[in-house]
Length: 515
Image (cartoon, rainbow, N blue to C red):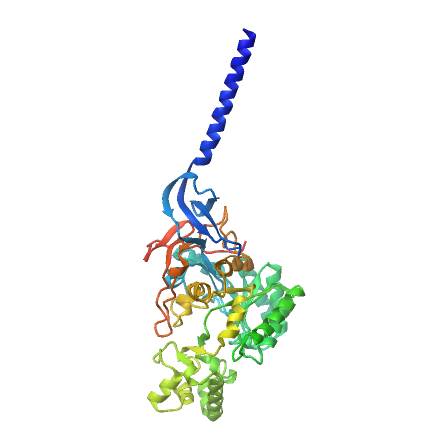
């Protein structure tokens, strides 16, 4: 009996083990967890720059719950997307964007080209509110279609503090700027931007900028800079000014370019300056838009003495001939009147050369009397393609639009799509993993975006599904506001917001704050 009892126990124990083993096998093949979305058999390009792989991806709520390379495994999900033949990437992150989500919260220009996160407050200008958190709260209530992060603008700090156009701030005004900056960063700003080619930032001297950089560094932020001068003769001096601020915090060159410069060798000279700074311990990066025409206010053509705080009407009376000569020489240096395309106002869509012919007057006279320093924006065809493409290939250079929903430049609607269509598929200047890293993981790491920019469990489910060969830019200089196409599925915070050509009515973006 004892022997039979022991044998029975062994049989029972074996049966229990067999049941447990079978249960384990079954749990591998079919989990009992209910997921919100299953994306099956996607080719995942995860944002790190590493090679792609095929896997199933599962989403719960607003986050990636699981990635399983065993594509035969079975799961229970509310919805399933068959992604066979499609690439899955993180949503693109635009480190340098413009616009007002309170006025245009749909932000479809960004969404259509795969951008799920944008950073505003660029070129030294942010909302003119002493308490930036109030503006962020207003955006949260408006519920933008993409995630929005903020930088505080140096030009705005000058105006709010009372410094305005003073070359050297008073001790009181300097303290006010520092406090406004510190408060903005406590409210969730990711750092400060400068626009030193614009007023009033143009008047700032290195001592002021370095003092503010110390505040940024103390708050674990970064400085993004539209530098003082991007012309070939002055760009290195402008970079060195920024690198001085890099002693106190990470620094970043906005829309890196060399106006009038030509060739790969010239690009390498600039990149070597940045590489040397990194070797010396400075954390410096840059962003880039893939066009040879810039876009900004027409004031870029006018001298400082013809702009605020100076009275333009008095300048016309006292220095008209001098200003006309300056404008004529400036425009001709910038590839002539054919290379300036008016982007806003009554002359939108025409070059200065066309206007000169139609109005039968010199282009400088049109600038003087019909447009003025604040009468329009413009696109300026002033960059060399070979030089700019050399910047694009650098591993520390990420992609941006420098665009907005209302800007008349194709970069606003097509920049990220153009990277894939032109530089990955057609020219093969970048591999797809390299390009995706420049549009996702690199900006997320550089700016400090919490749990976004990578395909990784626990990260927010900002996700794109697309066939790279189907991605098209569509926007042109003649028709700059045409949406990009080819992104089959776009998810923001776990929700499908675009499927095929159809956008959802709900807006799923959130305001991001520095962690």
